[in-house]
Picture 1: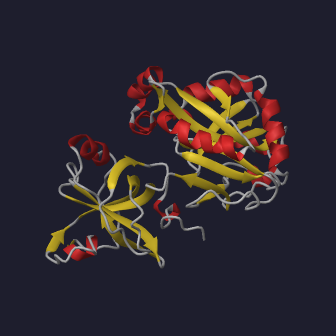
Picture 2 (picture 1 turned 90 degrees about the vertical axis):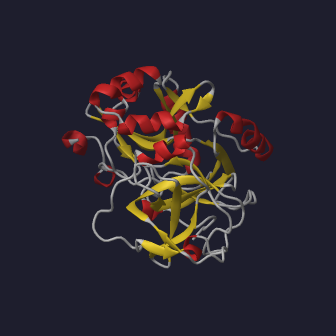
Length: 339
C-alpha cells in the first residue's frame, strides 16, 4: 500500500502487529487485568486488521499476510463504511446454518481465482470488529481500552452487514452465560480485556478462556502417506525445540482428506527423524517398536485433548478438529502456558 504513509503514523504501516491473548484454565478474578474486566466472545475465524488508507482497503492477517483478495465482500464493505485513516482489528467469520463455519474460511485460502468468486457467493464472510488502532490518521494504541472501544462504537454507528461490532460486557454472570449458550453457535469461549489497558501489538496482554479440551499443536509428521494420512504426530515448542508430544486417534476419511490438503514435504532440514520408537509418539505406551513417520512441513492444527497434559506430552490420544493455516508454528505454546 504505497499511499499509506500519508494516512498512518510510521509505527502503523502495514503489516501491523496485533495484540494477543494468553490461555487460562479458569476464569480469573475481576482484578486480574488493569481496570474493570471486560468480556467478549471468542470468535472462531481469521484474525484480520482492516486498513483504510487514501480511499483504499487492505486486509492483513496476524502473520502479516495481505489477504485482501480472499475477502472481496469485506473489502467492498470497508470501502463504503470505514473512513480513510482507520485501522480496525477483528475477526473474519463465516456463518452456515446458524453456526460459525471455519472450513468455509479455509476454502477461501485454498481456492484458486476461478473458484474463489463462487465460494464467496455461496458462503459470504462477515467481519466482527473488537478494537481500533488508528482513527483519522491518529495512533489510538496508547489509549486505554475503554476509550478505544468508544471510538470503535462511534465508527460502527453507520455499519451494516457484513460489518458488525463484537458484543462486550462487564457483567461476569452474563459472560458465563455467553460461554455456555454460544457454544452451540461455534464460538470458542471468552476474551478478557482490562478497561485500562493500552493496545500492545505482538504482546499477550489479554486472556482467553476456552473450553479446556481445545488446543493447538504442530503437525510435524503423519502416519501413512502424505496424501492419505491416518494419524497426526503432534509437536510443541519445548525448550526452544519442536518436540513430539503425542499422536492423534485414527483420522476419519473426511478428516484425512481435510488435513492432506495442507500437507507439504518438509522444506530444508526437519527436527524429527524418519523413524522413531513407538514410545516417542506415545510416551505412556510401553511398545517401543519402530514407527515410520512421514515428515511434513510443520502446520498448526487444532485438536481436542482432555486434561492429561503432563508438561512434556499428552497421556491420551488427540482428536483432530481442523487445520489452522493462519497460525505460525512458532506461535503455538504448551497448553495453558501463560509465560
